[in-house]
Each structure stands twice: as C-alpha cells, then as structure tokens.
Image (cartoon, rainbow, N blue to C red; front, side):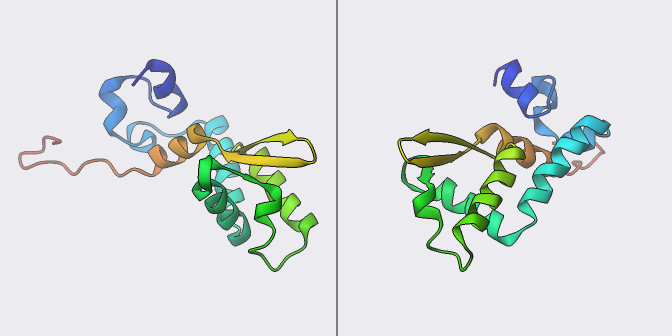
Length: 129
C-alpha cells in the first residue's frame, strides 16, 4: 500500500495499517467533521440503498434513470439524495448527454471502513497478534 493510499485511509505508515485510526489516536476536529458528514449521509435509508444500488450496478456506475424505479419517492427527491451523497464525497457523477451517471468513491468507503475496523485483540502475554 502506498503512502498516498494510507493517507486517504487516515493511516500514516505501514506499521499502523493494521489498526483503526481511532484506536491509534483521537480524531481531530476536521477529520471528525468530514467523517460525520459521510455517516450522516448514510443515516438515511434511501441514501444507503442508493449507494448500494450504485456500488452493485454492473460496471460500478449507474445512470440516474436506473435509480428512480426501486423507490416510492419522486425523481426530485432521488436527485436531492444523490446530491447529499455527492456533497458528502461518497459518490461522484458525470453528465453524458441527457443523463448523469453516478459511481461510488472507493477512497471514501475505504476511509469509513478503516475507521470502523476493530483493533486485533491482544494475544496472551499482552502482545498484539
């Protein structure tokens, strides 16, 4: 893993790559605000499902036209939820002709995932495995 990838994940060196950032040191205010915005965006069931639909769509991206059918909400409401996910840095978008295509931002999901990882349990004798 490169240093830039570790930086995205909130990790400074390869020795620390095994442990959650919160276990190594407390989050600073800026990181906490960024992460809270991402978690807040995922706190809505429609947005969580949208992210899942986008991530699981063939090719890793989905046209907005493919995202409105599974929900019992209006197209403007779907657009609002996609805007929240985009502003939180969880999805990116690209306009192609009349349609907008959305894709998950892997670095954002990796950052959330690394934050939630549980540190390995100490082995017998107090030494981490």
